[in-house]
Length: 343
Image (cartoon, rainbow, N blue to C red; front, side, top):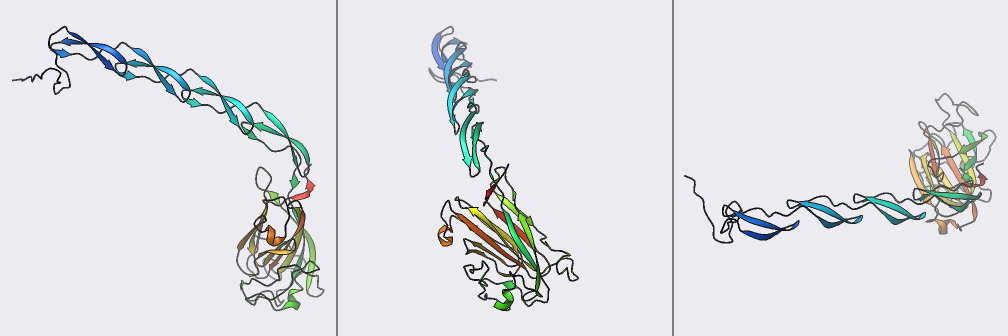
């Protein structure tokens, strides 16, 4: 037997259908779509009947309308709009469609620009200024001299260890490091050390070399020389002495640069490395050791190194390979050679 429970006036049945009094009756009702009518049939109110309508709505593009049917709202329809927008290149316009703003379109613009090498133009495309068309400084080239030693030299194939403080913090009047001794005893005294970076008959043989750096980014503002097997005098000068490589040599190299602000100089390698900027010690990786790294930020060290923006300075690098079985040499820098410009 099926039992039907009737509720009192204004109440709803357990099926959420509101009972009514007399069939055929009408009353006003509302849904999210607006106002409509309900009819009393079989002593129950029907669903609110609201004619399909369009109601106001908005999205990120602006104001529009949406169709509302059976209490359900459709998507907001906003006519495509063109809005003003701005990029680093200036004012432009962008279309806004389906609630999404398209990229800002700015007419191609140009502006004058300059580098240390001359004047040029800079174009702005897709909201970004491109590279200046003027010539730019070429990567630095370190002009150097390598000196070959026999493995029997007292400072080669000797004690191993990190050894800071071998040299003073200023170059000597002849542009060479000044020996002070270090802390770990990897050197045998000033007389022998003074042979490292000086041509000494009967002790070493020398040859001039260049270390050209190459750009490593699209803006040509960062340069690198990277050689994980740095043996520039294999089978030459005093020879390999029966080894796979000529391991026992020193290198001194230098370049000039214009300090413009923001430059860095980084070295990774083994063994000894000293870098002097403005004749003052900036990097000390002295000793016979595995691959080490040090970086000098010229802005942070400007006071210590005596640097003034817009002035030209020398950078001196002194390197020594004193022990088998590896030789690595990496320079990374944003210092450019402002005396040489690309054609």
